[in-house]
Image 1 (cartoon, rainbow, N blue to C red):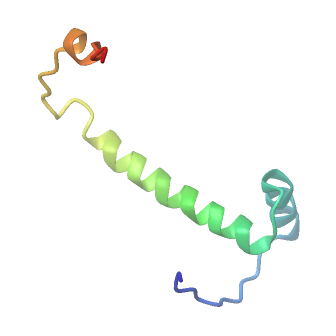
Image 2: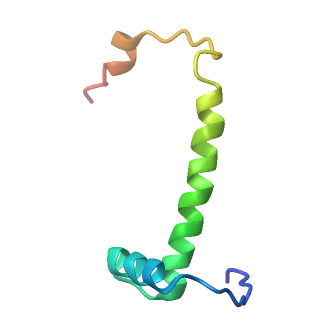
Length: 69
């Protein structure tokens, strides 16, 4: 079971309604999805800061080959 926290929040009605229309889900599910997207965008930003800083030595041709068993 996932631990949950009950909150009270004042949200713009139009924003919440539009978000629910997009997700096709209820308030809780829509807010959880929104929070996950915020978390994902932060992870993407962190990964973006590494762009050009990692040196990878990958043989693309060899990595594309699949064993045919």
